[in-house]
Amino acid sequence: MTGVRAALCRELGSPEVVAVEEVESPPLGAAQVRVAVQAASVNFPDVLLVAGQYQLKVDPPFVPGSELAGVVTEVAEDVTGLSVGDRVFGTTLVGAFAEEAVLAATSLTRTPDGVDDRTAAGFGVAHRTAYHVLRSVARVQPGDEVIVLGAGGGVGLAAVQLAAVLGASVTAVASSDEKLDVARSLGATRTICHRDADLRAALRETLPGGADVVVDPVGGDLAEPALRSLHWGGRFVTVGYASGVVPKIPLNLVLLKGMAVLGFQFADFAAHCADEMARNEAELLDLLAAGRTTVHLGATFPLDDVVGALRHVGDGRAIGKVILDVAPPAT
Ligand SMILES: NC(=O)c1ccc[n+]([C@@H]2O[C@H](COP(=O)([O-])OP(=O)(O)OC[C@H]3O[C@@H](n4cnc5c(N)ncnc54)[C@H](OP(=O)(O)O)[C@@H]3O)[C@@H](O)[C@H]2O)c1
Image (cartoon, rainbow, N blue to C red):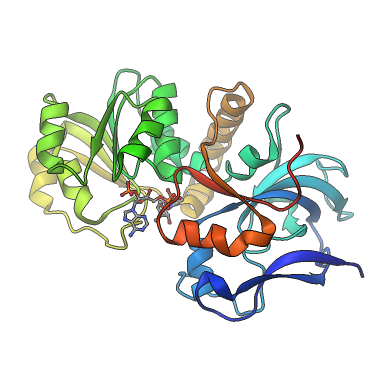
C-alpha cells in the first residue's frame, strides 16, 4: 500500500498537536469512493475535535477535516453514479486534511463546471445550512426584512448572500467593520457592528417597522435583542451557538408578537424532509453553477501550515471560509 501525506492528530490538544506525516492510504469499503483531495475547508468543529471538546469524540490517531473537494480516483464495485476522473466535493466527520480521503458515495456531489476546488470545498455545509434555513424553515419571501447574526461567519455570510438571492432585504450583524464590509459586498443592504452599539437600539433605528426573519447561528447575548426586533408574526430561526452560550428567551416575547421560534438541524432535516432537502440542494447547485452565489475565501493555507489554519479558525479570525490547499491549486 502506498503512503499519502496527511495532517495527523496523534493526541488531543491545541492545534499544535497536528503534524503533517506520511500515512497509509485509507482502505476502500463498500459504497465508498476514493478522492484525491485538492482543497479542504477548515471549520470550528475541526478545532474542537482535535481538542477533544466536540460533541462527537474521535480517538487519536486520526486525520481531521470534514469538507473537501477533489477528483475521484477509485470507486467501490457497488457504487453507481460516480466514476474515476469526476470532480467532486463533499463532507465527512474526519479525514479531509489528506492527499487521499475515502468517503461514502452518497456524501459526494459532482462539482459544477467552472467552479474551482477551493470554492467547492467551502460549499459543503455553510451554504446548504443557510439555504435550507431560509427556504424551508423561515420560508423567506421577496421583500422580507431578514436579520443575519454572525454575518461574517461561514453560515452567516452564506445566509446574507442567499437571502439577497431570494429577494430579501438583509441586515447583517457582526463584530467588526471588516466582516461587515464583506457582508455588504455579498448583498447586505444594512450593517450593524454589535461591538460598537446596543444591538436592540441599533435594530430599532435601522428597521423601525421591524423584521420578518432572524437567522441566528451565534446565540448568546445577541439572540434576544434580535428576536425583540421582529414585528408581529415574525420568524426566529436558531441555527447554532457559536458564542458558546445557548440563549434563554422569555416566552412572553413570543406571545406578545405572535411570532414563531424555529430550529434547524441538518441531520433531522435530512431524515424528516428528504424531498424538500433534495429540491433545495438542486436549486442551490444551480445557483452555484450560475455564479449567483459563491464562497467567500477569507484565508487560504498550504497543507504544511495546517496548524496556522486551525489557529486562524480557533482564534475567531475567520471571515467566510478558511481553505487548506492540500494539492497545489490549479493556476
Ligand atoms: N444546525 C445546523 O445544522 C448547523 C449547521 C452548520 C453550522 N451550525 C452551527 O452554526 C454555528 C456557526 O457556524 P459557522 O460555520 O458559521 O461558524 P463560523 O464561521 O466560525 O462563524 C461563527 C460566527 O459566530 C460569531 N461568534 C461569536 N462568538 C464567538 C465565539 N466565541 N467563537 C467563535 N465565533 C463566535 C462570530 O461572529 P462575530 O465575530 O461577528 O460575532 C463568527 O463569525 C456553529 O455553532 C455551528 O456549529 C449548525
